[in-house]
Length: 583
Ligand code: FDA
Image (cartoon, rainbow, N blue to C red):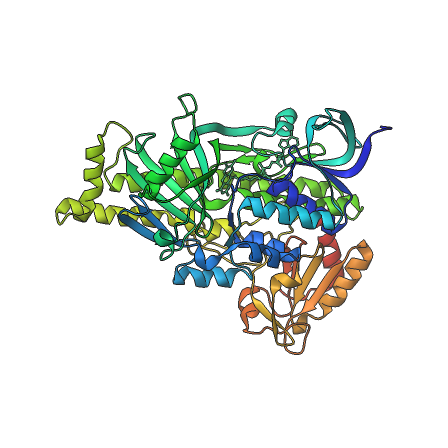
């Protein structure tokens, strides 16, 4: 492989999946190189909902404040409106993204970090900037062409799009983060389930000061139901805030069985004015694009030394805002494993846990996002709107009947309320966002059965230290200052948490770490100990005795736990870590 560029990990793509992979690898000190097709990061806002798990991960990376500084805050995200147009009738309103006071408590108790709205155009440069400053080498205008694998590595042919020159990169591992049209995944032939391009959508990015129309009901999303609007029979349009309240993105459907519409500024302005409901509002169109709604996921994320992450392996509509979040979380799962294997601290087997853990998540979110689209049907049904064959007048009558003092009106109002409640599964699905429980070779069970869900697992978060689950968050005291359990974990290392009578675990962690040549940070939580249990929340959450322990992986998922002290804690911990690290 003389003449080739050499690197330990080649990352293909610089979207949320690739840019975050670069950030994680750079932070962990892994030698890597990023190639990406275009001259810079995403050129349209695309993904924006940034969920708590993602913000937590950025907190671990030390860049949570950068995200908060650029994002629209949680408080301004949630008065989601259904209307006939922004200036027209409001049909219904729901509180979303955990902004209902009852749900807000649950969100705040679940994580040290709140969700926020950060358009991809702003998020990617933050990720890429920090990655580069920490050592990532990033080549823009560089396109993946093909790859060949052998036992020792992968040879990737790439093309410099400025010169047309092709060259080869030799990597020990490759991360395919090249998005929903992934050439790498196609070349690998990863098994895919589902379908692409189920429905057509167009995105219209525009500037317009809509403060007057939305300032009193701040939200990220305004849904507009418009009978007879220019395209597609029933118009369900979406006006999405990009920046409050003057930069926007409208998503509007088109019939994918027909040739794509010839979208120009005039047509886009007409759609914008229809959805605003006031054509005197000055509008400047910024960009237009067409995209397809997909329902597709890879059943396996790995082929040899190449790993698929992000949209390359799961493709779905924007509902639930899971696209970039899941992509970043894939990379977070993979990066520490690659770092341990490359440093010789873990066996190759650890890498098998990547798709054991993430492929079920990908399937879950693809199906969830598609079901959320279908559940809009209940709203249309409540308003008497049908898929086709209705005149504009019939549709309008259906919507008007919502205000009738008749039996029909009572029924409509009741059905609409239920239909809007169903949207909790899209807009308040905390369980989907935080509830992943990994089952894989990188998790060691403690012999207890999986804890049952006492509330809806998609809607609600069920904190548990059951091995495989995400470490529960609560506030601890650092000489009186509040720190999260998550602040003790992460940083690329294993963490052990125990109580005052569990102090022998700390010595055991030191011995296990020395034996295996890894870092294990061990903390006693209790009065006058490393951290205090400020509100006694850890005692309520830990599910093990004070003399037990919870062993946490570098990605803040529980690797193992012990209910109490054991005869030889050092041996128990060493054996467990050996198993987790495939040594
Ligand atoms: P992503 O597609 O972001 O990145 C792929 C990267 O690979 C790019 O950097 C690209 O240049 C590069 N690349 C591609 N081919 C290459 C090649 N051959 N060689 C080298 N590099 C190559 N999600 C959401 O949650 N809410 C939303 O509102 C929306 N809206 C939305 C609108 C539109 C129009 C799109 C297209 C997508 C969305 N999404 C979304 C989805 C969201 O954008 C998506 O889930 C994430 O961007 C996925 O991140 P990835 O990094 O996996 O792929």
